[in-house]
Amino acid sequence: MPYAEGARPLPLVVVPGMLCDARLWSGVDFPPGHDVHHVDLRRPDVGALAEDVLAATRGPFVLVGLSLGAIVGFEVLRRAPRRVAGLCVMSTNAGAPRREQYAAWRAMDGLIAADRFADVVERTLPGMFPDPEPTPGDAERYRAMAHAVGAPAARAQLAAQATRTDAADMLRAVRCPTVVLAGARDALCPPRFHRAIADAVPGAALEVLPDAGHLLPWQRPDAVTDALRSLVGAAARTTPAAVD
Image (cartoon, rainbow, N blue to C red; front, side):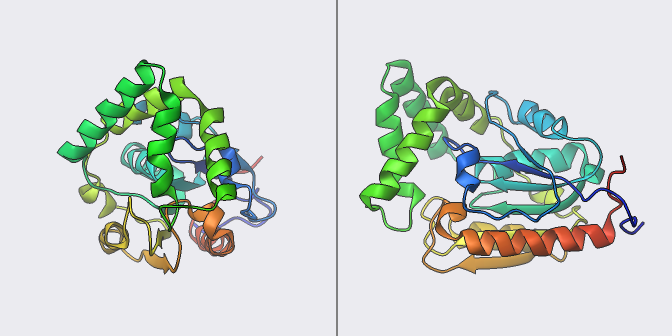
């Protein structure tokens, strides 16, 4: 059924990555007229976080996720594929956790439990940017956001990471318009992860952004803005919007 004339535009549900909050998207110019709902990651299970996304709005919506936020989005698609009218994922990995990842998450959780959350923030900082030694301004911007998220939420996010599963089979069943964005210099989630996602989703569009790292909405807000505007247009043409 096509987008109904006079219907309310599809809302966007936006999910950040670990140690990130709504300020991650501060430079993105979201499509005008569309409600934007930001979901915080504060529960220790990907399934519970997916339920938070589904509860953020009624009816169909466009899902936007970065890193862990995209992983939560994959679980949303597994649970309620008809609710997702459009999908934009970036800086992420659809595979199951690797052994070394479990070990790294346990180590970070141990540091936080020992009241060393600041050390965890410093450990994660180099992987957020295309250059492992970001500018002082970029580093301070990331530290401020991570410390605002805080240690309890960080521990929940680490626990949630360990509950994720391989999404490859689910992605092959996705039928909504889909955009996959990757930073060409993302050390955490390199472009090959995103090519695998785009290859799995029928009709997905992949864009690899040069000179960009993990935090694409900060490093390439123009490209994220353009991708979302294109996506909501495609979603509107294929999905009925919610009506008041």
